[in-house]
Length: 294
Image (cartoon, rainbow, N blue to C red; front, side, top):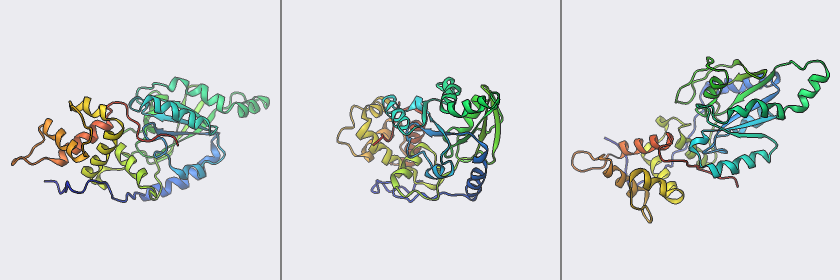
């Protein structure tokens, strides 16, 4: 039986999640950054800014960077193009990709060499043309780092799981093109000063569902989808329209259509919320981006 009160229609919890192993990770990254030539930062194409850890900028300062917008296959393609231009404008290389299937990653080695062209030229002038390029792979939990490394290392031993915080120690992987990758555990910052950032991370599953109210979170997602992607909701759940409907009304309508009614005719809010969140995260609602460049 859910404790959800349908009158409370917003996700208001303050998300604060900073396990002790993440403090150790920061120290390890600060030591390891001196060993690498550049940084591969993996972000979620659906929430490119919210899925960036602002502390990584200070840890990796002055290192050339390539941005991988992972899960681009379930992000709005027009929005992703805008984000590529945005990050390119900061001096970084940016690639839209899907780390699980490898789509887009065929450009990775060439983009790395373009990014580090000046450094490679110096190595060659010193007779070090065969030197390996060493890159640190960084990103928040559950953003796709291990999937990226396994894909590039053709079945390497980096662990993969659909939950945050699986990778715990630094590991080196050699991939084609004379490139070595240093994997690091996913790191979140101590707190989310902007509640919208915490909300978006919770939407995509970067924050564990155990620390959020799934029903209220789902209502906030429905509020966003009704405003920006109403056609996705209507197509997936065979709704005529969600125009002028409140998120709670949409949730109850979806629950009714999917038969998620308990004995006595009550809506099973928890069950329908879990279903909607799972279908969004799995891309079954279509290509959706939750934030745009300013």
